[in-house]
Image (cartoon, rainbow, N blue to C red; front, side):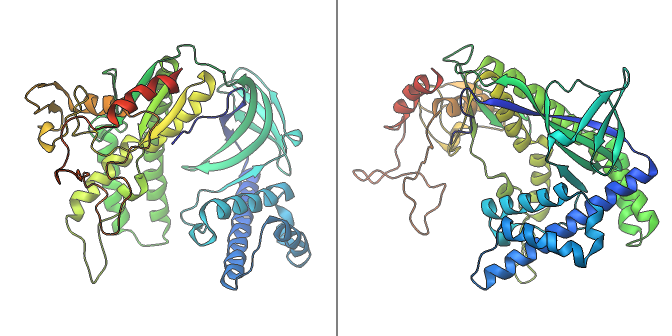
Amino acid sequence: MDTSLGRGASVLSGRKYRLELTTEQAGQCQEFADICRSVWNTGLEQRREYRRRGAWMDYVPQAAELAAAKHDHPWLKAAPSHALQQTLRDLDRACREHGTFRVRWRSKARWAPSFRFPAGTLIAVERMGRKWGRVKLPKLGWVRFRWSRPLGGEIRSATVSRKAGRWFVSFLVEDGAVTPERHAAPGTVVGIDRGVRTAAVTSDGDFYDRPFITAGEATRYRRLQQRHSRSAPGSANRAKIVTAMNAIMTRVADRRGDFCARTAARIVKRNALVVLEDLRIRGMTASAAGTPTEPGRRVAQKRGLNRAILDKGWHRLELALTGAARYTGTTVVKVDPAYTSQRCSACGFMSEGNRESQAVFRCKNPGCGHLEHADVNAAKNLRNAAGHVVSACGDLGIGRSAKQEPVSRATGRKPHGESSSFEARRKSIRRLAS
């Protein structure tokens, strides 16, 4: 699966700043977000009702009905019209991409308040000094923000959001950069193995990892969780505890985002082709609790694995690589990860016994004996499989395991050593990277 952008395309990038709102402006932002949330939920319910009756509803009739609803519900007029229309556009896109019944409601308790101004021509930005700037937003007027970095381009849109009790504005700018037609180092290829012990290991032998939460923060967060479980639902004390927990997790998420951005920038700068595992992270981190009639097994162990996967930021690293690749002309490819941890990257011999431990890979082929770090070996296998959606099973039949190794029709045995398509995958690297 190729996730690269078209060559020669202009690049749009984001710039996020912390807002300094007055009490009145903070109240307005919260009101705008609540109205947008109500429009989203109402529009989603309408779409679901139409689908139940076998009919279809899209953005155009819903936008017309929204304009008419303002006469019967004056509170809708408090929010900017462009923000409400953009909410319906976002809903329309979500329903088309994921399906009407798979789009989620925006809960008041769980949804982070946000709204977007899609018209960049209605947004004005001025710099007030070395540390401060201000932006003029529809119905909000001039709002101060912390000038932490230059805009660096023409504003296309602005999104106001709240996170851990603070309000932020994110500008989508066209910075004038264009995706190169060719990478500066054509022919360079790297495979990346993502893990729970080390966040990312490359086929070049580079290990990328760092802790995202300190020991003190982990202790404080655990104590806050205990206090949260003992507090009364809906109480002011519980709200204060949630705010404190969100503040810690916000710092952790910011460190994770910084790590992913820095790692992605280094990798795409050096390589014309980046190969990742095609992982279904949402399914891998699903709960194993089961149902009341069929309780799950090893729930605590699975919960720990889920936390480890989510803590390493696998999906965020993938997004960072895709975004950074736009500036270097790097191609990002995802391939099937099946058997990459069991196959020898030197000779292609595949066996469960090859991986002796979490970190040690030793090929059991008598004629090879290749010894290497297990994650580096897996990353090399990903690099060798570049450009192919590798399937170890071919066309899967009903009831056949997706992890099952293919069986030779001639001998009835599972093949050992290098598969017939393994060398073809090696040769395809040159075509993709050039």
